[in-house]
Length: 188
Ligand code: FES
Ligand code: FES
Image (cartoon, rainbow, N blue to C red; front, side, top):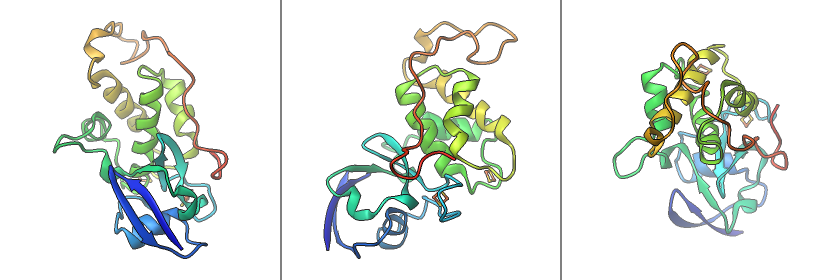
């Protein structure tokens, strides 16, 4: 069957097997191998991409289900040669250790900051609760997301965090953090 969708801002039309998963479509057919495939059981979260801005585990969604929708992968985070603040945050704060979980972490973080520009630590931990980092280094990942929140465009207009209370502790949470789409497998 033929599917058409927007991937990282470009429209693509491809022939796919009806049973092909979105993760395989992205990796094997479009060669967007930044999206990782870690478990095949909807547990690890490393395959998370954004579909219409919502984080979705692409191993639990058929490519055909993405037809007509906007898909954004980790390759689409960088804009005009500029790294996204989330990518910069992971660099600055050592958020990528072995790096395998990093694409999913970053896409989930991007969705979180899009809906909740100043999440507190608990909101960040809840948002990434569907992602497994086997290095168990969640502290630096949380710090990376906090760094990104503090360096987003317009962040300077927000109140500075109080000394000694962490980068975002003094900042209000503006809405509930996104959860990885339940219809597509859900957060574990
Ligand atoms: S590959 Fe593990 S949740 Fe998708
Ligand atoms: S950085 Fe190694 S699994 Fe996350």
